[in-house]
Length: 548
Image (cartoon, rainbow, N blue to C red; front, side):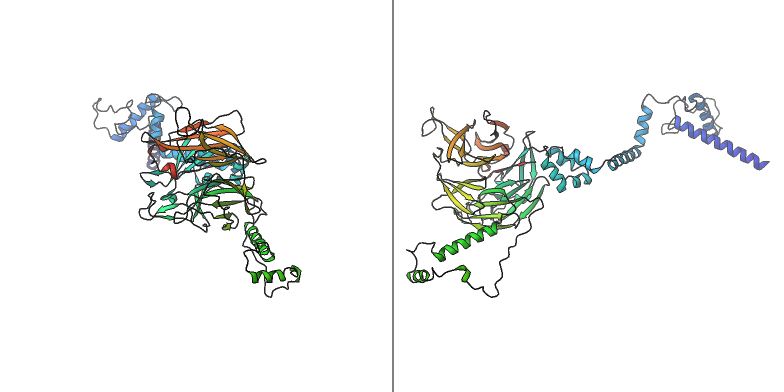
């Protein structure tokens, strides 16, 4: 019997503890820091019964409170409206965070990769760069070649402008200013690899920007110093879509401010084979009599004339141990796209003007020398590739074209040459297979700027059939920048001008649509970049445009 009574008392005690636990859930922290639930407060002192045990008094209080609060279905909340949920969330933040992570992970697991790609590929480039910071999975998903190809084939990209070579406090900043044309917002990109380099040239193709040549100071690193400098041969490749930097093969000659031209070519075209064939043709002409006989040695001339007629290529015996020449050409890329980059002119290591040129093969990753510029051509100041020909304009108002497939220069006699002010360099651009030039000329009369005459910047187009220049448009801004930069992207021409006035450097970015004949130049940005820059930025700047 005693054991049965003990078991019964033990069960009653367990029931009382269950009541306490249930009541603690209803009234939350009954034995809190402040003394428990305010509704069921301790009233043992009121009845003058201090000898009651703490446990028994608590059980009684719980029973009284249970009578008040009732069952769980019809309980009376001891707190004001909404306080219970706030109190529970505050004390269970870790649990809530864990549940939220589980829900997010479950959502990502059940969302297929192709659906994620379809959503991410439609983002603007700026939003896409922010989406890559969300998680590693999104970053890896948006940097694959398949994803890049989807963006190229889709209609979700917009033009971006990249401004290089800015100078602040006398030092070349290691940063790039990027303009989202669609949103008209500027962004800064860290480029410490360019810190200290100035007077380089840039050219863009596909999703990459090529930085060619340039200078850097020898005495004070990072400062624009023309007294003691080093001229570079190196070529850097910047990919904004992946924010990565790579090094391409170095040029054969060090150049600063070279004139660049870049273009895609057919996969079957070989730069090395073309140059070898040209050198072989030149050698055969010299052997057979392609050169003038007047300036040749008489003895050699007589021997060559004697052997001219019996000369036959089929009668030449094969030389022993002679193997055919093997080229180091790599296989063409899978997409079949190949391009060449041409660099001519510029200034050499001793600040001397150069008339040599070289061409870069993207498959071979190698620079090959090309024919020099024509004689008496002058200093090249601008160039662009249009319809398979690299057009170069000189400071002496001469135009020449380099045929990329055949590998030779051709002088081009155009009529008439657009009048221009010689203090401003003309700029050649190609847009929609049309060749344009921007030059500064006097609007009325000739001479200094006065009340009747003023200088204006005009847009000219060259008729490639008849080689005549035709005026297309007039730029609305006064030509304050003698080294204004102009680039093209699809059917748009972008220009950036930087100049100092009233002790402050100003910048203007304009745009022109060549497909719309009735359109005019429009401003897309004013005074957003050059506020804290030096005046030397007007001379060292360069710009590239990409569709991202």
